[in-house]
Amino acid sequence: MDESRIELHREAITHINEKGFYIWENAFDSSFCDEILDEISRLETLSTPRSLDNDFHGHKTVRYYDVLNYGEIWQRVATHPNLLPVVQGILGKDCLLNTFGTSIINPGETAQPMHVDDGPFIAAHNSALRDRPRLGKSLPRQSIVVNTMIALCDFTEAIGATRFVPESPKLDYPKAIDSDRWFNASHPAEMPKGSILFFEGQCFHAGGANRTQQRRFAVSVYFCAGYLRTQENFLLSISPDRVETFSDALKQLIGLKISRGGGLGHVYNHNPKGLMRHVSMPFVETD
Ligand SMILES: O=C(O)CCC(=O)C(=O)O
Image (cartoon, rainbow, N blue to C red; front, side):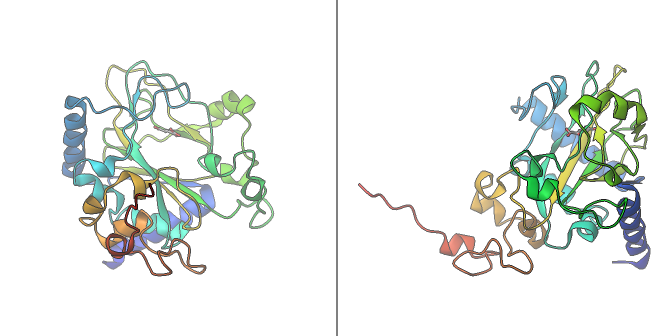
């Protein structure tokens, strides 16, 4: 990898650690974005079912998840050299894909409540992560999650650019009741097509309201530390035949490699990479 790209990674990692977010303008070529847009259009033509349609994720927002089951292009999105190394710089090389899907905000969609993406990992029963110590006085806690929002069109405030509060990882987690206050303090991530907004899991953010007649096309690639359980269960949702076609980097991201240190995720005490097909237990009829 050339030195100038590595320097950009460093700049992004430092900014995320200090401010909780980073915008890498034009990180994806316009032609690559167009390929992704063609794939989204193909999924829409096939009437692919939406994964989510609710008050929080929106009723006018198109969310396709488990996209690794669709066109090959999704495999290149998750491991893009302007995306994955930045996330690994925060979460470690053994980080995992947590969720991966579209966030296409249609005209008329209202803004989401402000929230943090640590959310699923700090839910009420999980005080161990919720109450983890800060890295120093007025500093964030250890990062467990990083999300990315890839703009597939120009992001403007009016079209519903993601809203975020700079330096919010240094604050206490937001309460639902304070959503309007944090929304008023937030900035729209205005950025040209092909840019990536990186935001650390403690950063307060929300999808914006779309007040235009155009659709806001975006993809979210959301990662967690290698020792956490992921929201999407990729090892179940993607067939072994399909997994065989993935790059080593992508196999690792869906959990086919033991995490560093404690050997989490082994198969018969072996690294599962390449072994899944050979060692997985055959189905045995018991009666
Ligand atoms: O689409 C966006 O801009 C943000 C979406 C988001 O934060 C979420 O769904 O949790």
